Image (tube, rainbow, N blue to C red; front, side):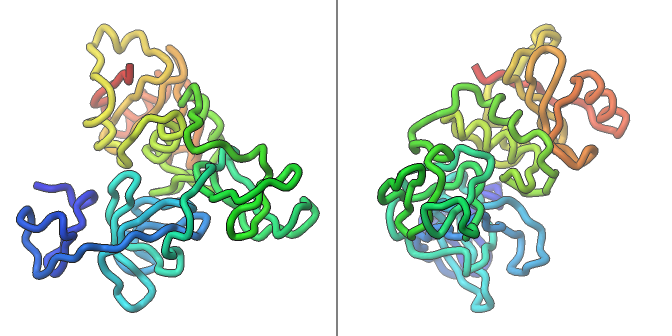
Length: 281
């Protein structure tokens, strides 16, 4: 059965590319839009109090298939294929292709070339922007916002160590479906970190367990290496070395670095065993 998280299909409507593969009353081509909010929630249902499945960041592309006429649109993220409802106000027709991405955990967008001006917005790590020109220490985006140049990197620049990226999020509040330093969940942390290092990554921990790396044998798992991924049902952590992990978790309600054996024991006591340990290389 097709995963509904990745399949833009409902009984009344589905994406045109799924015609002949799924049943639906009608099929539509969809139109590409760009996320213009710093962070846009992707929800299970068209309501502001519906469960947040994931988030889309500034500059991400979304293919929209339906509008409910009450402020929400239904579509699929181009980056990882996730399907859900987004606020219509968070999207616009793409104006220009992004040229840079935010490499600081957060950066501020100013209305002019001065840090003394009240900022207009705060953009998260991984957000994409179109830079038109430079002005001293600032990069000026096509919409006239001034961002600190040192907080930006080229789109094709990749972090050398995805674990180091994840470690930078230590202390970030835990947020179900979150993908930024304002709030992040376990699989969001893995996805953001791997993406920063140039490795494509599915959104949810079960998808990551199925799609990333090779499973370690019991003997290999006794000697964890930096970058190994440890999976439980509904949870994932990143090994920093042989004895510590970094993970976003609801126990601490934060992204933390902790002893691997202590974490495994606590999670086991809560009723969950390790289901797999995967090595990416």
